[in-house]
Length: 531
Image (cartoon, rainbow, N blue to C red; front, side, top):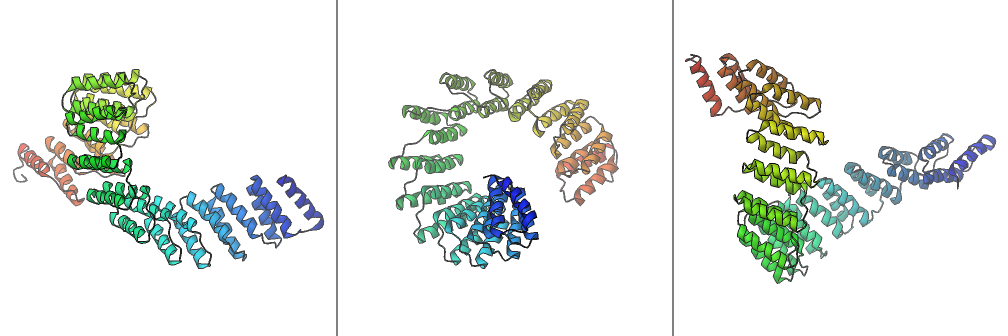
């Protein structure tokens, strides 16, 4: 019905006949909440209390639910306190509503407190509720609280289910706490709790991430022994990690075992071999997996071709790389920006700037939108090959397309112009960076300082150094080394030695270059005693 009309009628009736029965107020409060008029409901609840009427538990539960759904968690917690103050004791429903809201709000501390409150009040907690609490806390990285809740669950006589174990195992492996993660896996076996492929897969992934490939392989063997057959994802996780560590024999052994189990490798599995072998420049072996992949009816994707192309560029076989680019396009595989950025980077690393620019233009023509990283990779390649002005054109093109340059984009140009000795342009770009709200880091300051010192503009270097010292990040060893070198070259030995002493006071250890610079400076400016 019309909740607002009901409230108006109630207030008018109050004026004529005085306070009504509690259940009438409660009914209107609940109607307002259900209609979404939460603030109206709260005002009516407040009015009830002023008249000496304490709202029913059901009314509080509906109000708390409404507040949680609107993410007004502090208000919801306040109502729980108010309930207790009026001796309207919360029940399982009340706590469930509030805890669910707090879980969505990722407030692990508040959830933990409410669970302890429930236990102290003798309220039974449903195992599924425990599972939800532990799951959210583990995802938030609150592993100590999640484990304390888990232990409390057992202490209260509730047997944890597979979901609670899975959440903890995943959380511990995410934090690379392999021992605790594996201990829980063993505990599950002892309690005869069925371990799903997902939980085993989580453990294998965690072991691989922490570098314990022996442990990961043993878990895969345990799976088979327990009757839970590993799937292609689990095998591929293990294979990929072996390949990343250049343990090609072990990877091939796992592939053989996988096939013996009747599990066929998928595109991701083949890609793992192709990527791993290509990075190791084992191109013939990588090619054999591509052939096998196609023979088995699987279609190579951008990652497959990307690995091949990068491998051949790295090996200096540019013609072969171009052949695979053409093959990829002929097969209808559309390259993405990750592929294109990687291709441009590979060409730049090999000094093939014409090819890098051609790949970039081809990407643009095909409508593939690059990001700041794509543009910066090309700019960096141009700068390293002395084409700083061309890099600036790419920078302006990026901005013209609405792509915001990042700290690396600005840093690339500042470094390029500083090394050319064009400090006016380097400084202008630095100022633009600040105006655009991109915070320069210590590396960028060091680039400018180096440029000023190389140009003999030591006073400008000192001014910038002073500005840097007032920032949130302090000068590092490279900063001091650069300034000491600049002071020595201009004959300001007093300042050079002052910076040397300051550097040591700040706990920065001078390297051999600093000492050599000071000695050379003293000799150049005839200060043999200091030398």
